[in-house]
Length: 141
Length: 79
Image (cartoon, rainbow over the protein chains, first blue to last red):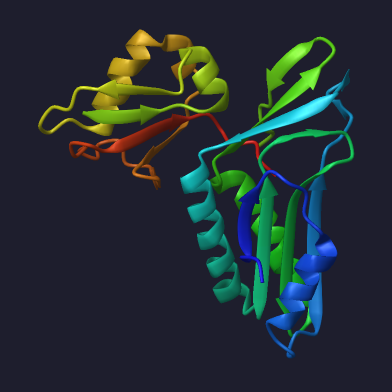
């Protein structure tokens, strides 16, 4: 079984991640997932590729803390977080988050909380590669 | 010595992803930031987060131990 929190270059399989999540407990009654993927536009410009850079050791540690906090805070039975750090093109997967709980409300709430917190706390940066040149993304508040 | 790390947009503006800074007894994170910001003002225009040994630090008065690893970072944009 692969680790529930990972940073990797290669794509992930949501089927494999959900299978792993389900295998953690037969008490799971609801699973909410979020997949972040690459858009082909940003602020009126075409985007050809998106390149990611991470402070790898800190990013992984923060993602592990995030998973533990989500499990505690929302009473989850399990959770998984996978973020790719590589160069992707439009339509490619970037991040996968799954929350498994006894009931749907906790799963939905935890999934939303994890992606929102990840964006605030995990040291990863994206650079958009456009026909006009490259630009690091300035996050929206 | 203190190992200073830069990533993404900050590394681009500094022109390097890592440099070594001389450690001095009682040196705070703010002191190190101020010294580097004087050398790399464009890079530090976008620095809004700091980490010491892989942990977020909000108290810039934190005193740095020798051989610390410090990162000065722009706002994250993962996900």
